[in-house]
Amino acid sequence: MTSRRPLDRTRLRLTALLAVAALLAACAHAPQNAPGDAGTGPDNPLAGCCETPERSPAWLVALAEPAAPLIGNVIGRIAWRGGYLAGDDKALRLLGERMRPLDVVVVSSKGRLSGNTLPGLFVHAVTYLGTEAELRRLGVWGHPAVRPHQAAIRAGAVFVEADYRGVHLSRPEAVLNTDRLVLLRPNRTGKGGRAGAAARLAGHVGGPFDFNFDGDDPDRLFCTELVGHVMPQLALASRHAYGRRIILADEMIADALAGRNGLRVVLYLKGDRQGVLKPGRAALARDIGAAWSGQRPTGRRCAFGR
Image (cartoon, rainbow, N blue to C red; front, side, top):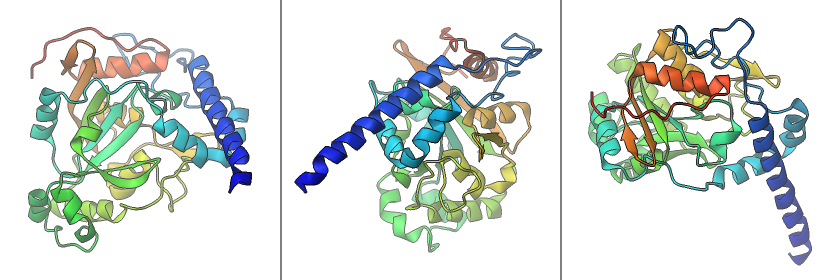
């Protein structure tokens, strides 16, 4: 056992160095709008969104590829502050009042390393499975895929997400440990479609996470890929980056705003040190556009109302 410790420490140091290098490279290569794009102007704030997802040098990605699970585990655990929405009763109430089974919550957590190494403003997606009562109404509470998780659901773990821990159930307070969230609702699923999707979503719990972010690998799933896998009728857009197919969280939202996929925006919450805001769709578009143009997303205060 003792002979392995120096090697383990060396691997951890190398992993940490690669993680820091990835962060520095991502920050140094912020995406810029392509020539002729409208940028983040008032006419088309989303013109440059998602066009240049390859933020890190290709050599760094190739170097890190064999150690992707190690690096992902390190990055996933590093946070220098909690999310601005964490512990906010008003945010919890607003989200709870609006959620329905199979809604998708897309989050932005800039106080975490993982929220800064991936391109864009929103980089993670979580799907609301539902409470016992909601799953009973859908007719899937007794489904073989749901039964193993009944105790956890009753205890409040009503979301499903894919991250460095694998595909797992999460509680609302964990999901709200973030700075911003967007609630997206599938608009192409009737009750029968939602029941099937809920069963598929529950069936993925316990599955492995795809640290390589390869959308063509059906055996391992990353967060947005899980959404598309469970609800293929959403027609989520994908892009190729570093030789693999990816689904960007920002593009999910941008396409929902433009009516280009099977999702619609229900709620946008953003927090800062002063509190929690509920801006509208226009502010959401500006904030995403600013992130892809290399600008700082707006921190302008606005009324907390409907």
